[in-house]
Length: 295
Image (tube, rainbow, N blue to C red):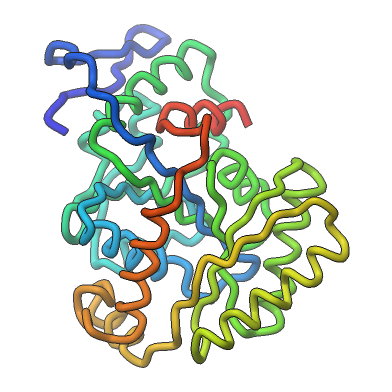
């Protein structure tokens, strides 16, 4: 990412600028995998899952960008002991270049800190949207996976980011409230917006057997009430006593306790996802942002 790219104020508008020459046409490559990770309720370990899954992808040579989209309670920087000065809103205002906003995480992971308000994205003019898309598209050659850490619940911003992502991962724990709220999120996206494909990831389960039982519960209810819905079992991350220790250290579990049960599960999960074909027709960072800005 050595391109100096950003937005600059010019009068009452914004002008796209690029200090270096345009790059030569890219070689044909795999489409970027854009995944939102959501949960019906808070406190289910969503941000930890995002961070450690990113680390697992990084270990199999996938270039990862984390977008912290939990606008009300951003946790990615806290969990990693980072103190970002800027976020994407500073790019929108023409105050900073995109490269100045992105933060280096563990390994080769890059992080886009939480935006100060989703409404800033929806109030752009058509010209600004086009400019912003061109700027963000510069990221594409440097990304294989975009992980979006979405807030819990069914607020407008949660729906907003889920609608823009091509692959939707819903995190569920053995708690009855987690199952109920995860189903509520799926139901809203299905009934109001016609979304029919979701991947279910069980977290903090006793073992794989319990994880599959969690999936069976939510799948049974969805099959009964939501006709034509497709739920896929993605896997199980087991309950791991090393996780709170890693949180205290402000380090990813994958880094602090690489041989722990959950760390091994994250590695298996990343390898499994990497073997799955990404969504056809939906394979670019620019496509994601077009959907996001037009949501």
